[in-house]
Amino acid sequence: MIRSFLITVALGLSSTFLQAQNSYLDSYIREGLTSNKRLKQKQLDYAGDLSALKEAKGLFFPDISMNARYTVARGGRTIEFPVGDLLNPVYSTLNMLTGTESFPQIENQEFSFYRPTEHETKVSLVQPIFNSDIVQNYKIKKQYAEVARIDVERYKRELIKEITKAYYDYKKAHNLLLLADTSLSLVQENLRVSQKLFDNDKVTIDEVYRSESELSKVEVQRAQANMLVEASRAYFNFLLNRSLDVSVELMEERPVLPGVPLDEATRLALQNRDELQQIEEYKQLNQHVTALHQGKNIPGVFGVVDYGFQGEQYSFTSEDDFMLASLVMKWNLFQGSTNHRKVQQSRIQGEKLDELYLETQQQISLEVINNFYGLQAAYESVESAGTQTRSAMRAYELINRKYREGQSSLLELIDARTNVTSAAANSIVATSEYYSRLADFEFAMGTNGLENY
Image 1 (tube, rainbow, N blue to C red):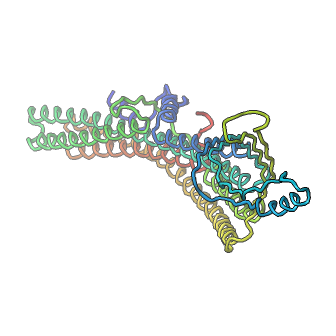
Image 2: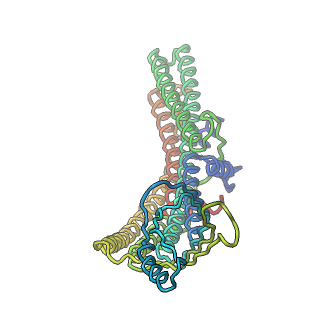
């Protein structure tokens, strides 16, 4: 039974689950995409950019406002109207010609510049007819929202990769702990056999002491494996935003090398990677920023309509109302070459983005190559480690049988047990490394299953 259990743990295989899809991991990924705090922050950033986009869209609609003013004035400037000086000579002449006093003398008049009381209540409508700033601002906000959306998708892919790798790290630690338990059982059995052989005068007491020493070493190894289990489980649960000590369900799988050629993997990566899509969006964003600065030299046209009531007393009759309609043009003719410099800066930034795009393409291609061959090597390591484990287990069984019969030394038995434990541990680590490499390879291609969640 120990032999069968050890090989199962070492190879990470189970006949029940050889071809099964890892439904546990799928459910954990869905849970992580729903509950991860960092992802929620990214999604809130995207929601904020969508709100800003709606705000920018609202600038195309008319701005309607109501303004009311009531004024009480005292003092201030006056206006003198010399009506007496203008008319009195004429009136005097007329009185002389007619021999009457029909045309009396009048005084010069003086008026206050401010009326004692005054009110104005109006509704104003301002409708942009053409304004380059509003048009380009909307396009810029739209690009920012698209960049934020891609950022959410990019983080989702990274989170899927991290959850997958954390799952297999925990699985590695779990299997190493099982291996330590199995080794502990083997060493305890060796100690029992050594004691029995000593009691029957077939070995000396030093072999019993050696067996006890080996037992202490394995107990320390088990404690270290248990610490690794607790740490890896806590990190996995952290990614899923749940209690750190929640148990994790595991499913055994057989590594199967994906049949994707290197050139196809590179093509998929250059087609799917979010980094390249983000740079494309930034390039379009830069074009809109350039157009925004260029548009400063283009006049803006607005329609303005005011309707309201004026008078010295509040009165809303047809004799008090007024309406004004205006077509307004605003044109900034000179700003010290500021816009010209900003346009130059934006164009330089566009050239930098072009270079960044090419550099990112090369980096992604290099990443695909490294992960492609790294995955190939990891698969070969799994196969080799499995073969070594089976051979080491057979050798251990033979030497153990000889030791029980007193035909082999304890040193040979310990060496055989150490070899099988080391081979089994290498197999567990190699299997975990394979799945970690697979997660990296799928992420590098941009095909790590985001559309399935």
